[in-house]
Image 1 (tube, rainbow, N blue to C red):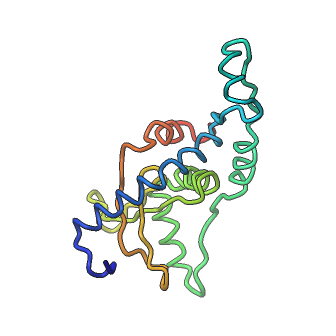
Image 2 (cartoon, rainbow, N blue to C red):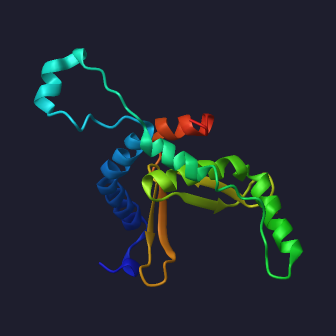
Length: 174
């Protein structure tokens, strides 16, 4: 079926199926970032036999590397060719949405799980300022046109990985 021929209901189902297929890989990448990877240096039978006699020692290199990179990715402003007012307007939107903190979560997700999403929408409380949120790839699926790279469809899938993302939202330094 061609993408242009899908109904909204078909897109919802398609995005859910695609996300379900990608979810195990995303969760594995997230576990490595969280320091919850399996002991790779022991055979599973030996690990089972030793049980509690062996403590897992995890030197969390993935978190160390990701966090070291993320610390250097602070957005400090915008430049828009020959138009300071537009740059100031973009910065006001950035600040109004708390993107200084939220962008950290997006950077971590993108570095740890290869993608992250910014979602822009209508702000019911202030129609002049768009609402911008960062969404984890554990909670969002997007379909891009391979030729134009434009988003054809997107769907939030809340409930997948909510615990880890919620923890990061409370403590972005974690």
